[in-house]
Amino acid sequence: MKHVKPVLNIRPVFPGRAVACLLFLLVFIFISMPVAAEPEIKPEWLPALLEKESITIVITDSGLGGLSVVADAAEKFSKHPAFKHVNLVFVNALFSDQFGYNGLQTREEKLAVFSSALQSMQNRYSPDIILVACNTLSVLIPDTEFAGTSSVPVAGIIEDGVEQIAQQLGDDPSARNIIFATKTTVDEGTHKNLLLEQGYTDAQVITQSCPQLTLHIEQGYDSEYTEMLIDAYVDEALSTMGDAGGPLSVSFNCPHFGYSLDFWKLAFSSRDVEVAAFLDPNKEMINFMLPSAVQNRYPRSDITVKVLSMIDIPQDRQDSIGRWLHAVSPVTETALYDYELNAELFEWRDLASGSKE
Image (cartoon, rainbow, N blue to C red; front, side, top):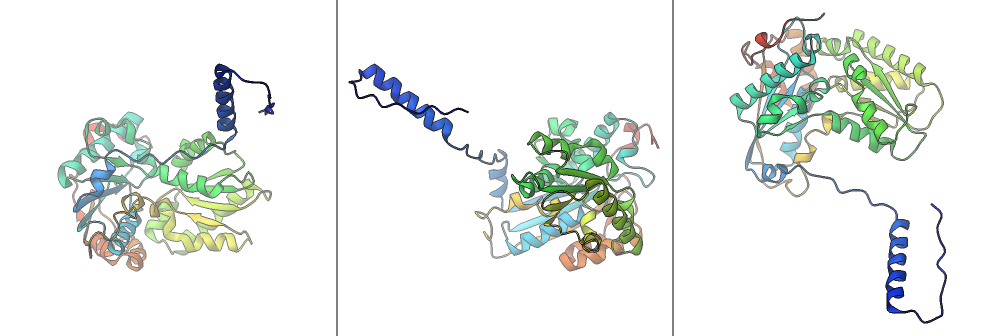
């Protein structure tokens, strides 16, 4: 914008002209000032939630990746007791061991089945809030019948992931981020599109799909085959990205991928590629419920954890994820081993015509 240099006028100025000059000067100063960042908009339901003495949080995922969110929540609420009682309920919303949401025929079927799952969570556990620790399901939330009829707030994980990436990229045009995610999440492009809308470029936001990695992490997050897959996907991403660019960050936009953090670090370091930050939105999901104003309201929090699933969780998957949970939250590890199997957790058969695969 071309700035106009004010001209001093030593002649007497009539009141009307003085007002006009003053207004012009104020406008000039206003438009020359840097624009302040907009204040964070808090949901209208959050203050009442934070005033509760006891709280029930349902965390759901179409698999076991979301258990890391449960573990993170249990640890943080224990260290910063904002509530007297915290009831954490993890619901594995995977409804079949033959196919999942991405195997359903249409988006309408996905919406109907997931809405049924959410309604069941509300009816069975009376949650104060539902957290969806799944990128595939988070995309569906606004369009579900449940979201339009229920008073229970539902928060997804996509916004946390996008915010993390944006903060890391900052205003450095040379900064880059690699999004590692499932093929479905990459194909949908939600994370990248939201970042492009904020002014970042294709060269700054690289996406890499990781087929089959979720399954193998559940079977063995520290197995040789999982390490081999991660190494291959890192190699592919770096080949696509090229050598040019500034600071590099990595984002795990599948809730399972953070379980194998050591393998990701090894894959980059073995290629002499420096990573400024490994971003995991799983560790951000619960933070909005722990602002400094409510931390340590009580001497301690009584924390309970329950795990439920519609399908059998094989022993090798319990052992794999259980080993990881043990170091973070033993109470969550115990809940996984003591999980409740309920094949009728929510209705889906009458809502789906079968698998498209």
